[in-house]
Length: 89
Image (cartoon, rainbow, N blue to C red; front, side, top):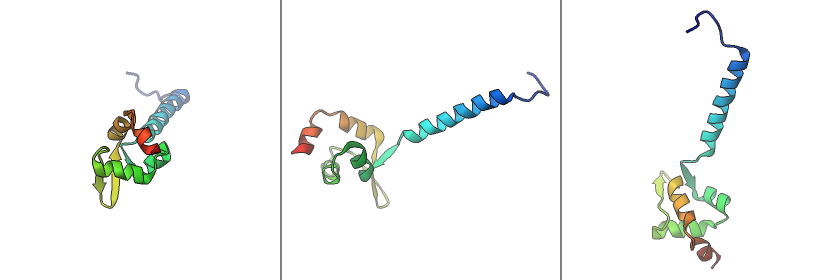
């Protein structure tokens, strides 16, 4: 290990950029979605989303006054083939 030498400005810049990219990627991956965020991201209406939550087809958790759908549950729901035809009806 080299002692007494500081890292170069180029190396610090590369490390700083990598950290910034990691933080940005982590912020893009949601853990949970609100009903309004699901509506905005998918175009499905809030009443349709709430119906699917009420019937248990879309698992959700209540956190205080908010209803949140975990990202994995939303992805599984969206992977179903028949949800779009139901939303259009």
